[in-house]
Length: 254
Ligand SMILES: [Zn+2]
Image 1 (spheres, rainbow, N blue to C red):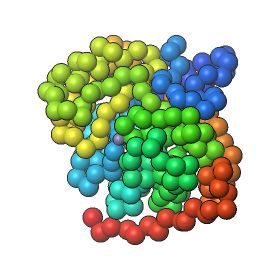
Image 2: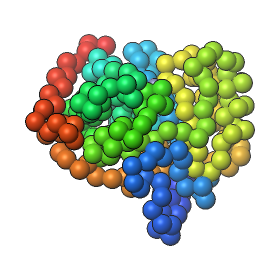
Image 3: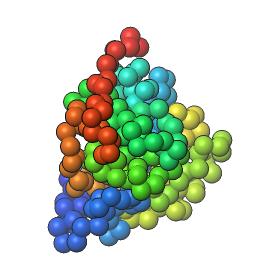
């Protein structure tokens, strides 16, 4: 598996070196990675969850797959150990807002806080600042793209959905994902659902049989814009006097 990871890195480096900037350039959103490499990124939204996320991490380890977790900041501060474990196992942690509100309905200050608070929480817990943002419900607008960009976040959606928010048979979820994935695909799944966890080994097995290799978003999209402003001094572009308050992380005992 180490050889496979190395192969992924070499293939991606070659593609990125010889291609003009596209994925990750500008304000996004990005729907997929390079189409010329048989790499796929599995992404899991809405965690961390107290019980299902640790199971998901174990399962990904057993399958030798690195995934990407789009986490909700207000949940992350309840389960900081789980967040640390995600990073320790080599997965990507990405920003899915602070409280999972419809960000297209927020004023610029609240929008900015939704993104900044989540990044702050991740950085406070793991020491790493997220590089990717996925708007809750996939609802985005030009303001959210700009806010994300200012915080050094690339907005990443998906080109393949497991459509697992409604309960479906694991075999059904897996079959539709395996059918739809193309090189560079970003697959939307949700981390707190039993049927998704049951579908995961089938998805991995089916895609490997078709020659796909798995990568985290950090591996698939290694270049993303730098933050325009330091996170701890950030505020909405039009209201720079308002300071984003630091997140106080209270370790949970679970
Ligand atoms: Zn979500």
